[in-house]
Length: 259
Image 1 (tube, rainbow, N blue to C red):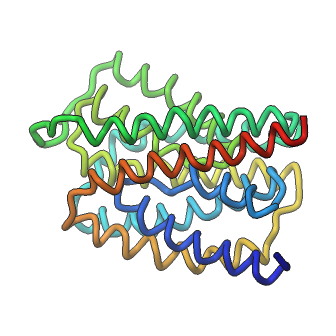
Image 2: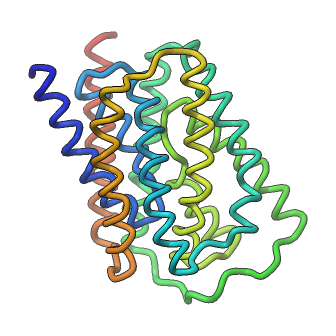
Image 3: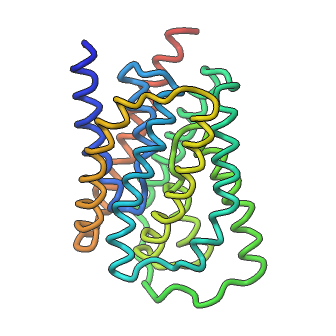
């Protein structure tokens, strides 16, 4: 596959990923990075580009959720300091981590996230109440620890973190699903921005790739957020879980081929 064909494939898949994942309050970084790796981009370029795409998708989709009053600003901002510190550190030191180790981390991450998305297909729907008006001091402490860990993972692998933030908000903080999805977009935006700065401080970004795929996800994030307000995406989420397993299998084959 030549350079132009590879770039065209990256643009097409970035649009599809951005559209589908923005419906769930996620930037799509859990798929952007491994997909770019499988298209033969380096791990560092894939991770840094994925973070930029996450930032664009989350900002675009987050605006739609904000207009529909589906973002809890106070709780969302509690995640910001920890997730920015973690993401910056992950991005800054990603160049120092062995590429093989990063690829193994991708495999484990995709298997775990794929299992979570498949499990959601059989989950019984929960009553969707309004989001909590107040969080306890213990909840805020847990948010800080959780956000730092998610930030480090985000910076290292180029994942926005929404795939982890949304279930944390719904299962631990007891937020309604759509409110958690909307709030996660704001959180992911800060995480992605800090990770990008960390990567830019340690290596050169691929600006042509970022520009081309960035336009695609800008449109996709906006459309996906609008569509999410009208759909029940259980079947799509299960399909995405299978997609993540397929991507993890391909990366595993690539790993075993060079060992």
